[in-house]
Length: 458
Image (cartoon, rainbow, N blue to C red; front, side, top):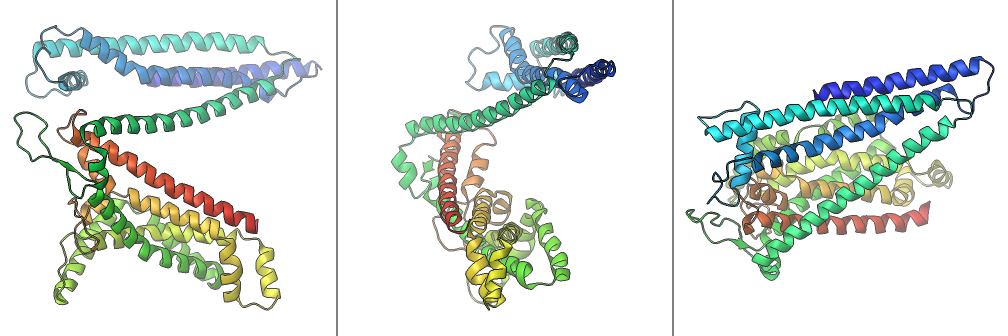
């Protein structure tokens, strides 16, 4: 039924475009001079129908589920949730939703079956109501747009005003989403710091978030010092950049300035293929090939190497980052004005001197942007770290030991039997807030570098 509503919307937009354009053409065929071309009259009608109805459908779908869940939960028998825990309503709601979707496991209670049937009825009513509203408003908007077709109507300005409003709404939506994400991190982190002192979190050297969530559960007392997690993130990122940055830069310099056109056309697509490989494939490669090779090599040399190491994860991550750095560097070098290269060569400089003293300094803003994008990608990578480095939080700078990263710990904290009133779960938001601050500082540093050198060479 929702697809039918979308089909109805698209049909109304097409009908509005065709009818209004034909009406404008008919007016012009009589010799009357139109303010706007017939195309803009059709576009105005299509946008007038498409934009508001599309927003209506999306808002309807966004709020339909929560509203129906609220009505269903309010209609439950009053004693079924008495004496249950804080997370029981969410579990009951999820089970009722599964039953309503036809996923029945075991023999549910009768009141759950009745609630699922009630939910299905509400969903059907909502779908039919959506179709009726879309049809009614679509007809009204079509009639309104059709009545506005005349010689003096500024259809082009009307269509542009609608497009301008859409762009402003998209910008405001993006800003609000960003603000909402930041506020959610801040508020949940404040709840965490009320349970765990911020000094313990910032300066603690032990990360053991496992703690009892229920009264009958056996687990150790948690420790929430994030230094081992931060150290592991920095170690893996450093290892990845140690290999990726020089290889990416040198490959880009060679392809941009020294390689023949035939070699460039062959090597560049091969490098870009690396960027399209899924991270889970890199994880398999690190686990099955790189880690055993490092372990056997270390054993032959008498060096102790853990089964999961930061060196394996960082090394394989470097292979993933090389195309990013190489591509950004190549684009930055190509964007340098041709006059700088020609002027340097005309003054007698060699190609190496031109690259080192003219092209590379002029391309630094783009190169730095590519490297910092690679840094953000390395910090946020999760799959390779889980498969190659493990999830043990060890406070060590040795790349041959097992370490973990911030993103891996966030992933492990937010899965399984957890509730959002426990320090174990809320610690994920504190880690997310610190990760956000860390990446924000990197971006600010990148902007300062880009602005400094852009003033010199632009």
